[in-house]
Image (cartoon, rainbow, N blue to C red; front, side):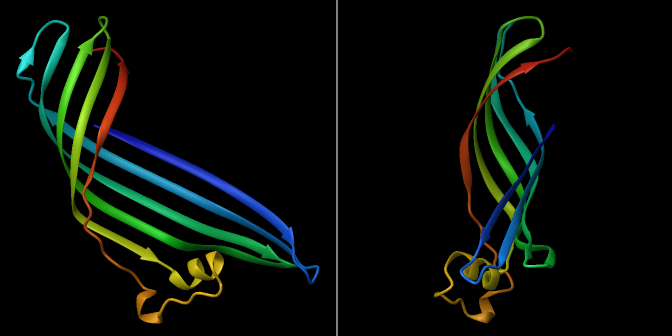
Length: 159
């Protein structure tokens, strides 16, 4: 069971050709909650190995706020994304001491639910003002994509 969180703010400031001051702040937020369960078929004093299953919920939000001349704009969502995932895992743990283990965990994740809310008008205008996305595509879209990867970790704790 675990939780991961990342937060980052990036600020940019410039004066345009009309001598108007622009100041923007981009807020990035990511939260990830997970629960994993393993069956260890090889269970020795210093080495454990076996398959596992897991479930997770992740949430990502990208916002922008700013000041143009003397007008201040509240933070608004550019991208908001949430997903529920199931995981097929494999765990290999090498115990290096009484309360220390080195873990290698390849995983394959399949989403139950994935939804992205993207404000395409704002996003595309910021990135490329000469390109336009049709209004019917502004609201949201759903994707089902599978994730896979490898986690390597060092666990320190007491039993």
